[in-house]
Image (cartoon, rainbow, N blue to C red; front, side):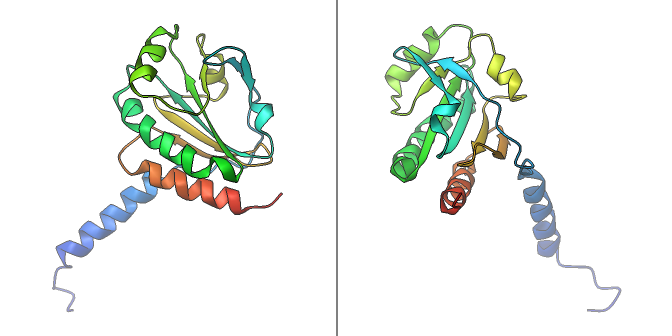
Length: 171
C-alpha cells in the first residue's frame, strides 16, 4: 500500500472496536481484601460474607427499578446453578429502602441464591457502588478481583470467564 492509499475502513472500525472493548473491561482491583459485611437475608436471619470464605463469591448490587438488573437476574441464576457445586456462590444485594418491591418481583422471577437487603445502603457505600447493577467477584482468599458497573447483554459471559478462572486457582 502506498503512503497515499487510505487504510481500509474495516481496519479502522476494528481498531476502534478493540479500543472500546478494552475501555469497557474494568481493571481488576489489586487483590485487596473484600470489605466484610453482614446483612438481613430474604427468608430471615443474616448472612455474612465471612461465611463464604474459601469460595469464589459474586456479589451483585441491584434494585427492582433498574431495568438492566431485571434483565441480568435470570442470567445470574444460570451462572449460580452452573457453578454452585464447584465452590462458588452468588449473593444478590438489594439496595432499596424497603424489601417489599424486591419480594414482589422475586415472586415473578424466582432465584435460588441468597438475596440480602441493604436498606440503608451501608454495604453499597462500603463497596463504593456508583450505579445499578454493580458486581464484584471475590476470590477464595476473600480478595476483590473483579469489579463491574452496569450491565449490557453479554456481560454474563465475562462473569463466567472470571468465575471459572478463579475457581481454577488454588489457595
